Image (cartoon, rainbow, N blue to C red; front, side, top):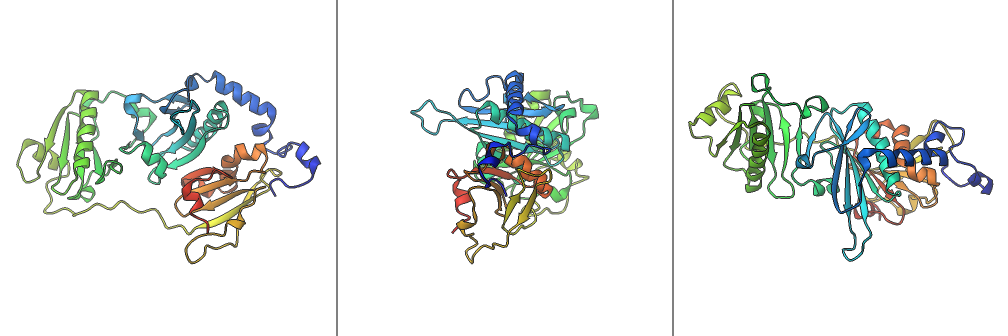
Length: 378
């Protein structure tokens, strides 16, 4: 299992003679620390309160422009560092580090994001709480940090290219949410099935940007839609039009419906995004994580009680364990796990169970677990 063993075992690097040795040895740690210290993109990282964002580009990291914070491309991977003071009266800083993976990001990009997150963690002394975010299944902490996020199709190749109107491919953004903290926008298919009476839309035609608000849309949806249109207009100098009612026969309304092949007889009252597949809660033991080149992640026989909670006695301090809540995959690191295991728990778990690659994850340390994690146990 993870640690255990006698004193002689503890004197030896638990990952020696394995394919993970070069990731976790003291020499590797020093190399990564040096790489982090010389990585220009990390300069100033975590020095003051606030959010910092980097995008993965060509196996490296590049700072994301502050005026684009909250906007992400589904073909990219990002690292987001949130620096805050748990005690406003104290100079001490704490960190959350999220690496966000778009639905069409490449394996190279999300692999680089994972490695660079460990590198940033090293630079900040191993203090950050790590989150692995997957588009469409973001954690509450991430959504709180980005309450009005915008997700666009595409990636690095097109993110900063100047748009030429005559070659522009129209895009439709759905804006939904009835409160300030839950309003979000997504790029959706440009067809009538994406429309509903209770949301707002931004149609980006290159030369024209059209904001369309239906009667049942909320104040916050209208506000966010107008914000998106304003930002797009500033980027390109395009003309922007606003439609406050679909009953009117204005030039904007006519142009809007032309993009859909004509105005339909009716549209849906509400738009319901596809729900992720239901996953039953489960607990896994990660075995041979420190002594094998092929770590495994085995599902335990433990089942939740009638209230859906697990017995907390299943947690073992000398192990790395995985508790799948059905929404979030928590990687729990016991206080007696080795330093190597504590540091490399997330990438090693992903290696042991590649199926978790499509799931949001959070690393938890024994003794400082979050409220959502504690709520999983009786």
